[in-house]
Image (tube, rainbow, N blue to C red; front, side, top):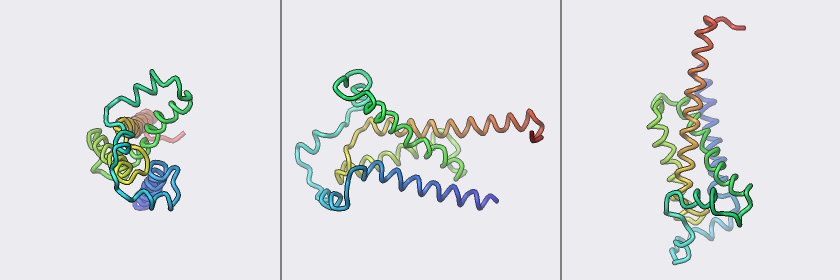
Length: 165
């Protein structure tokens, strides 16, 4: 039974990563667009259109962006968090190597950094250091969620003496 669960989690993780890649890297791009972006030219405008300052976008969306629709701001901020919750949730279920908060935080940060660097290098989107912060927060929330579920599950099983209702 454990093999079936592990296989299911592995498939879920692979599917999740494919969907996440589509949403982050190829959200608005066709195949032709992707090929044309593989030029790796780094003109001045290119570097000016990215955010390398921590909390700049977050602060702007929360307090200053009156010119941007509120729903768009909320979608951007929460989308970056929600998009990485499954990673922090699935990884500790899949591997015993990811049972600590620190390891999940580092793994989520590394995955997010990989996506952001791909966007920066290949222009598949826009690099934003705040996405790293929000994505990592999402992974942390996923990890805390699975730990809370495990604690509640143990408590319920202990309270009921292992009896089923």
